[in-house]
Image (tube, rainbow, N blue to C red):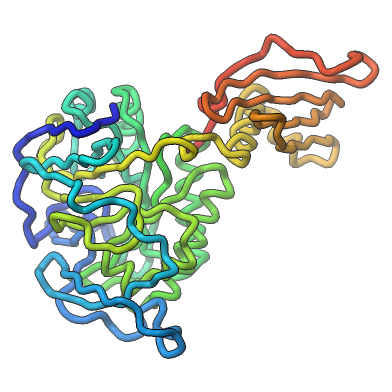
Length: 413
């Protein structure tokens, strides 16, 4: 349910410097299979000291641009850093004073919001019905990760399938994240392909999140990767995800925004921002704030990550033409499993086009039979009806008995 000015008090642990293993950025498994669950790997990659050379994404621009406003922020251990705010990046839309923390759970007093969690197999068995009943509405599930040693093997989270089914059965909105240790664009695309193959067209209500992180207390294959390369990797992953009909999102924190990622190049992708200060320190916009890694939630044993999603209303909820086109293709493939093979065959002529008619989105499917099938979509509700015209058989476009809601076939909504 969407909350507005409601508090859900519950006991939560005080945020500690040492991070417990849960959710994004938790300890992974080396390619040798050695367990690292006892090692502390912070979610948000805060490191004591100054950023290394050649890690600032906009370093090369500094000399030729006027001095911007300075921002001082601190990491989890209290070390302060200074960065220059980029005025070309969309500023934060939320009012810091509107966030209110009551015994560990946040509310937002100036708009609608949803509460969520993010989890990996480290959380073990989860009673998702209890999570939902406690007032949580969404969950990000780790779908997989790349090991951080030299080999960099990709692994599926062993609880993903259980979590996916049980969380959705309980009525939670679901998204996924992939813990990346890619060192170049090809590896980032490989990670995206792994996510796509694992999802295999399954529906997500929330985006697929790219989660690149720094390993702080062990040697890692990404130790010498520059900010420019991290940015290129992020673009490669997100483009691959969006090209296949899902929404993409980027997991980051203030240090990554200041010293690693070039957010100008990534402006089309929403941000899932991690920061365990009382209010978010970033000057830039985000959609979801991971505000604690020490949350206490009914149904989950031990600590877990807590998130708040400030829900935008109005046009942001409307279905876009690209989403409609992708959903109709998915619908057609489900109705006719052989159709996907026909599309790749030279023996058939099949195509889809998207346009509009008044307030409706119209997707035209040119069938291999010669029929012209049009799907008329209400971009607000998703309700869809179908017409058909076959030259020489029907005199005009005729409405069929076929109707459905296109949102049921959107891979990422």
